Length: 281
Image (cartoon, rainbow, N blue to C red; front, side, top):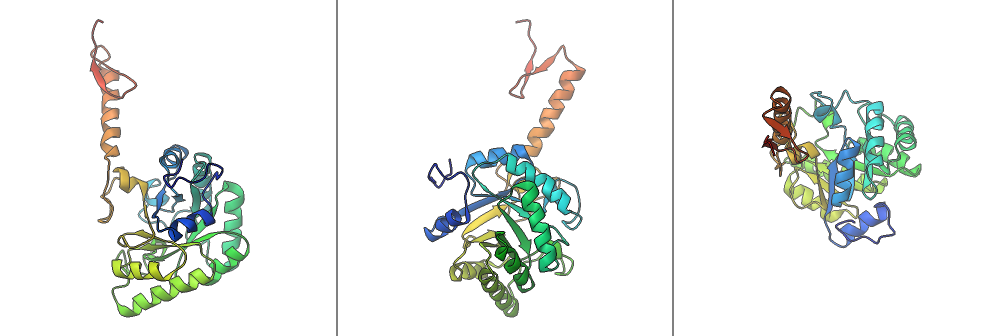
């Protein structure tokens, strides 16, 4: 059951239910997932949206950037996430090179929809992504836009930084947000945008904004699940505050398993994952 107490007859969130949350002033929630198990538990927790991000490349496949991620990768993992969920709106992140022009993007998105069962796609880009967004929405494919820091363009943008500090850049981001909304985007991710600018954009748009590293003034928030639960090899970004340390739990469980195998007469592992002293009883 969703934390927003949606009617029981609504199987999944839709664009209408998400818009209704913004209209009522309720914050939207989104996390990433890349597999059926994580998806299952995030869905049970009551998330509004699950994003199968191309962050898959960093946190699952071990790449330094998202650029090596392919459409085949995204389709395989998104299909698993869809199978693991029943209420959250599942969004596939269209990877690098699949949205270079409207027709290429349409072919990519059609394949993604047909092979995964996802309910929306996300694509990065400002004003240059308006034509692609319009083409997809006209074809009946819901689009979540993404402006500010766009990891697929990290080399062109000169690395990871906060966007909108300069007036000209802020004006460009505002213009992009307005045009993407006009083109049919149902929501916009604002990544690493100054908090004041993100709040301003959120107030001027009818559609929801989803922030990541852009302050509390957005209509919702998204994080990479690994950053939230402490399951990363490298430190999380400054704006992500882990609420768990799953990496330590996994490592400790593995150490306990190793000990139980090497010294079976001294220890045993129960289903709790705890190590107990073996007794004659």
